[in-house]
Image (cartoon, rainbow, N blue to C red; front, side, top):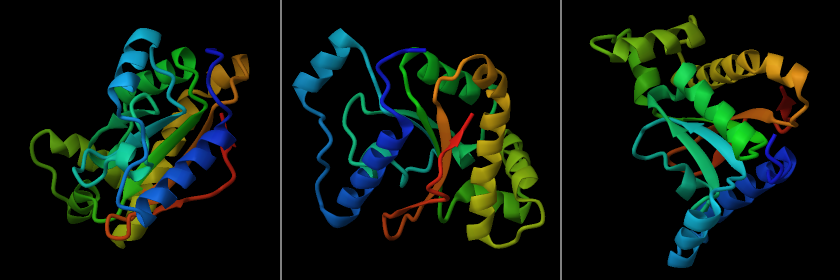
Length: 196
């Protein structure tokens, strides 16, 4: 395991503080300077958290958490669903970059969740819709469906990496959250991080 990652609890504190700043100010304090670009180009990246988020243009993790260049390893896919590609990206960031916190970030007014609730599944979107339908089951409330979808993705991550956790105690933890696109606030599903 890469040694430069910070503990998951500290990463969670940084995410919460960044979201608080985002909600209560009009500026992003994340370092996006030319010096930071050059530093990360020369020294490489060492993000403090992995964030799996929806591709929705209103959901920008670096902004939501007041983060700068090199702070977050963001994986975006419609509906924040998880498949082998996302799992490979998570494994890379955990093993090679030292990230110890994995956050599945759903959001309110999610088009992919709404499509699953409506039963829309044409073209390639059907793969996303079917995954979300499996996650939400018979739930009909969009907000609760978002929660089910986040928990489903968390479950896939935890189960897929369980063998690695048994072999190597990396201290990697997974958590879920819902971003409210109206208020800007992130509601963490629980504050007890689940280690895998």
